[in-house]
Image (cartoon, rainbow, N blue to C red; front, side, top):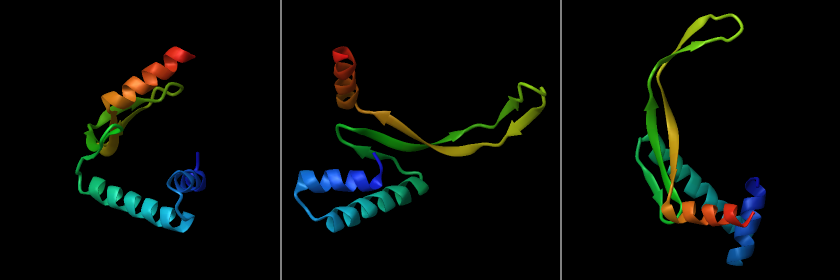
Length: 96
């Protein structure tokens, strides 16, 4: 699902104009981005948590040339799903 499809789906469920939904979604995304840049955790009840974690530096070996490269440390966004979402996905996989 892309950005426009998401806006359309939310608009249909809320029975709200697409322009309002788009503004709400853009504001939500920009606020979440600002919080993650400030290294804060964002939690959505019954969905999960987003948090920034630091990956340590590591050595990488190119398989063909065996050249070793040092990959510097970096910050990444990690998502941990809630138990409610985990259970829903588990139920979905049982039905397949």
